[in-house]
Figure 1 (cartoon, rainbow, N blue to C red):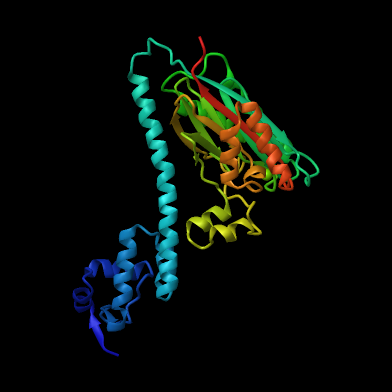
Figure 2: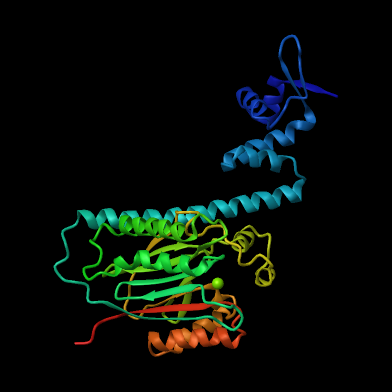
Length: 355
Ligand code: MG
C-alpha cells in the first residue's frame, strides 16, 4: 500500500494537517498507519475521498456522530442521509425564523407608544367536537372564546383529562383586556408551560398519556400561534388554504426527509406517532400572524385531516357562511368518511365590526 505522510496527504486533499489530526482524534478518519516510535501519521491514497467528504460534511454543520455514519456509507445511501439531514436543518430553521419574526414584532411594539386608534377588527369563532364512529370516547377538547381558540387531542389512558387540562390552563388568556402589546410571546410561552404542568398532573407522569395542543390567541391586530403535536392550523385567505403548522410526527419527519412519499404516508402504520406532545416536551412552535379582514382560521385534530383531504377541507371552509356552519360541515365530512377518530374543529373569522 502506498502511504503518504500527513503533509503530502494534506496537500493532496486540500485539508490542513491540523484538520487531519482533529479528524483522527474525533474518530472520523484514522490514519492508515501510525509510526509506533515517532507517532507520525501516514495515510493511504484511497482515503482521499473520505477525507474530502468529511470536510464537506463538517462545512454543512453536520454533527460528528452523523458524519461518522454517513462517511461509512456508499454513494447513494450517503446521498439519502445528507438529504435527510438537510431537511431537518430546514425544518428547524423555519421554526427559528418564525420565532425571530415574532420577537422582532414584540420588541418593536414594546418600544412604540400605544396606538391611539384601536384596531377595528374582531374575531368571531365557533367550535365543535365529536367522538366519531369508531372510538369509544372523545379525548379531544376544543375551545372558542373571544380571544382564544384551541384544539387538544389527548392520547393514552388519561387522554381526555390531559386534553381538558391543557385547554383549561389556557383559558385565562381569554380575559377581557387581552395581552399587552409587546408581551404576547412571554404570555403564550408561560401559558403553554402551565398547560404542560397541568397535563403532567393529570397523567401522573404516565409517558403513554399526553395531548397535542394547537392554540391561537387574538392580540387585537393579529393571531399568535402556539403549536405542539399533530393537530393543525390552517388559514383560508383569498380562496386559498394554507397550512400554518408543521406536524410533530414521525410520518411528517419521514416525509420531510424524503424517506416516504405522500401516498405512502397516508396509510403508514405509525401515522399517529408523535415526536412531540404536551407534557413530555415543553417547547411549542410559536409564530405571529397579521390578521386581515376576511381571514378564516381553522384549528383541527387529526380526526379531520386523517379522514378528509385538504381540497375538500378548503371547499367546505370556503362555502360556509359563518364559523358555526363551517365547524359542523367539517365534522360531518369526517364522520361521513367513516369517523375513524375523534374529530374537532375550531373556526375563527377576522371581521370588521358592523356599525
Ligand atoms: Mg386524534
